[in-house]
Length: 175
Length: 167
Image (cartoon, rainbow over all chains, first blue to last red; front, side, top):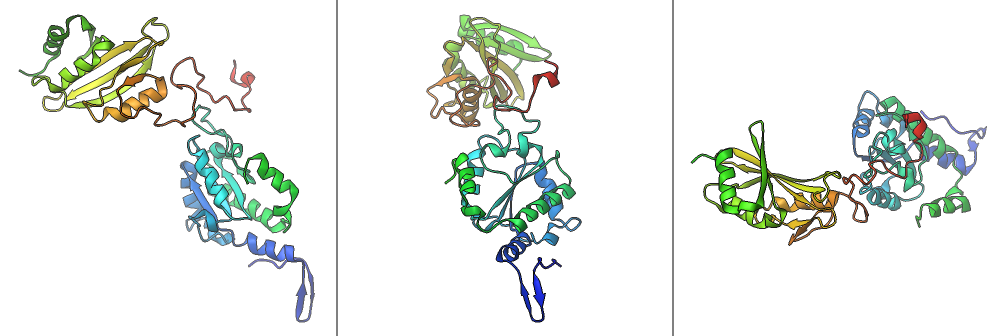
């Protein structure tokens, strides 16, 4: 059960800001898009399984279409040839959208310091949360998703149309 | 006549003479070095001769030996006669200034992608190949990554400090 946000309560009414209500709703109904390319993806399967069960945090429904997804979970080594595909998936997602880089490879290239591997997905798309580990345990992935929930809960409704956000996207050459 | 190392080598030497540059036996396995410019004829002979009949090209790959002046790049073929279960290895060396050799993809279809891979990683040109372009690496890559003059590590990596790796 989710706690109600701070507000003014009286008999028959409850008043709070729109930001916090929408933030609460978004944080507790994230639709993740799993972009799983290697062993971190296997840990993610355990995360979705009944022992750890990410659905407890409102992320019950995996969105295998980027159009309906809120949270892009990149789990595994991204080869340079995969880079443009990942970028296209990110571009197809509707705002607001968040990105979590799960594991050493997605965060920095990990042990694969080689000509064919992208040295961290933040070279091509902006990342909100990094989960370290090789691979991280399901608890760590859940912690990463909870940090995303914190971001979603506290995000201003105006953030996505702000100048800073446009500059961030422009720095990645994303329209 | 069952295929054997001696039989095959003699047959090749009789047929091609000078184009067979050398041979050695590693354990039971025959290695033959040939003149790269005669590769088209040799390949055709290996496939079509009734006694040899190498119907299967197990593998085709490249190798880079920078210290061998004049024959830095090599193409290694592994042939297999499935009926007699006989295999051997064939090598052709190329100078790095002009690394081109005739394709064998018109003889063994499986050579098509293997030659593309060898081109991708070593820059060896297979003449008359139907579609010689990169197959595994990104199209805009400007190097041949398995040649030894190119660094193996990604040059964009920022967090690796040489001091922590003892170099």
